[in-house]
Amino acid sequence: MATAVVLSPLLREPASDTYPLSTYPMFASDRGADHRIATAVERLPAGTVDRLSPDLIAGTDEVILAAVTVQRSIARSEADELCAEIAARLGAGRAVEVRVETVDVVALIADDADPTAIHVEATCVG
Image (cartoon, rainbow, N blue to C red):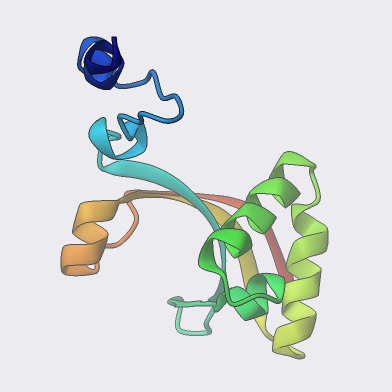
């Protein structure tokens, strides 16, 4: 009986994840290369953007927490408020965009590729 329990994960779908025997579906399934990432950037006078730190975006050093903060503000229709808070942290005259970028994460990591799509949720100037 114990052998059957130990070998049972071999018979399950990868999405079936239970304690104590995990198939680690978050690592075992293909999630694709394109992902949407909620973020905020500073719009520079030359038309380029400067990526903001998690601390400037959400007052944290955690990248994922900063992204979730932006994502939640968009979902709650509070992107304008978050934009104003970030612009205030940056200082007077600094332009900010709260946006969702679609990125090919492999190309981003390997080649520092630009986003394939950008949807601006809010813009403001501090």
